[in-house]
Length: 381
Image (cartoon, rainbow, N blue to C red; front, side):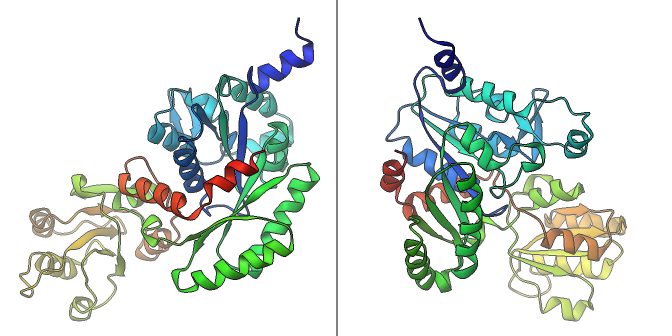
C-alpha cells in the first residue's frame, strides 16, 4: 500500500517521475517561447511522450470559456498536444488580479491549481517543458515567482538572456541568485537575439565569461529581425483597427514604416516595396500618390505598398477609397492620431502566432541549429 507522501507525489508529478526543464528568462520578451518550441521539436526524437505547461501567464486569450496564455495556445496548435489548454495554462493573470490578491479578495489558489494541472499533464509523460513568465522574480507579488514554481515542480532551469556580454552576464547572475535562494539549479543558459555583426565576438566572450562563473552556455542564437517584424494582422489586432479594404491581404510583414506628414513630392522619394504608410485619413493627395506608385502609374517600376493606416478616424473621399480598393492596398482605420499610431506600432511586442507558419518553422530550425540539444539532455540529470 502506498504511503500518503507517495500518493501525493504521484498526484502532483505523475505515476512516474518525468524529466522536466523550466525555460525562464532574465527579462520579458527575449525568446522563451521560441526556445521552448525548439526544445520540444528537438527532444521529440529523444523522448516518446512530451508535454508542455506555462504555469503562470500574463498575455491571455479566451478559449472554451477559460482564460489561457497565448503562448500555450501556440504550443498546443504547433505540436497538436492532446492536452487540455486549461491544464497547459492553469493561471492567467488578468488585469486587477494583483490588487485583488493584495486586498485579500482574490480566492484563486494559484499553487493548488498549478500542482493539479501539472499532475494531469505529466501522467505517463517522459519529459515536461515548463515555460516561465519574465525574469526569476515575476509572480513574487502573489507568492508564485518563477523560481518558486520551478522549485515546486522539481525542475532545473534553462535561462534565456538577450545578446550582450557585460549586461547579459550581470542579468544572468542576478536571476541565478533568485533561483539559488529557492534551491533551483541551472541546467545552463541560452543567449538569444545576438546581432549578426557582433555574433563572433559575443559568442566567444560570453562563453569565456560564464565559464569563469561555472555556468554552461547551451547556445548562442543570432537575431533574426524577420521574427520581430509585425504583420498587418498583428498591428490590426493590437491597435483594434477597422479594415477599410484588403482584409484578405493582412499577413504580409512590414519592412519599412513611413509617416505621411510630408509633401507628396518628398514622400514619393521615400516609398519602397513593403512600405507601411501611416497618414491622416484626409490626406487625399498622398493617398492618390500611393495608388499610382503601387500600380506603376507614377513611374514605370511599381513599388508595392504593404498597407495604409488612416489615423484620426478621418475618412478619405469616396473616389480615393475606391482607388485604394482597386489598387489592392490593404487599408486600416484608427481612432488614434498619427503620432500615437506610429508610437504604438514602433513599440509593438511581436508574438509568434500559429498562423505565422514560416516564423514558426524558422524559429524551431534556428534553435535546433544553435542550441546544443545533447548537452541539454545530459544536464537534465
